[in-house]
Image (cartoon, rainbow, N blue to C red; front, side, top):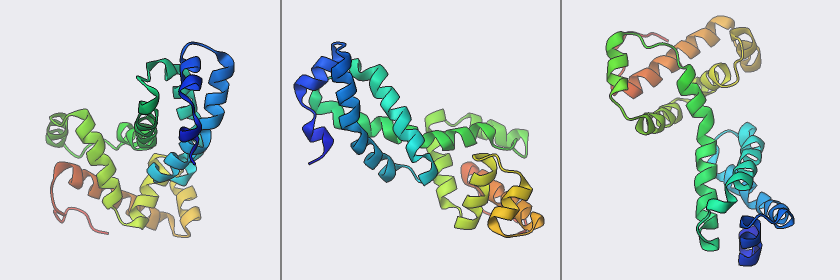
Length: 184
């Protein structure tokens, strides 16, 4: 039996009406399910605890907006799925400047939500070695030397993988095939 099944309508309604004790009980009861959902939705295990904490904060702040007790599980899954996408969104903000103004114009036409999903798909389409180097550099902010040390490769190999990964992401986002501009 999941914690969601054990959360009574009365507990949720009391938490929504401002009962601090009920809210605390609700957060404690939901934490195992939030962690389970985060494990299922987040691709990086290193962000699961952060997502759990952020989800608990969202529940704390927004418990009053939940329409009904029956909607709680669906609402939580949506919140967690969005929180799991945050690392990819941070990467999108920090992506290297595009190779040309024309590429910028093309991507500017894409609605932001669609671009976010395309970015997640682009990253997931990378080989494990390219995905890892990209995430280490752009999400964990490691230096090239730190990446090389962690991966057990030379600095040059780390730079080459990173450049190739960024090129592949850019090509994916622009809908182009390997144009031969980049060598590995």
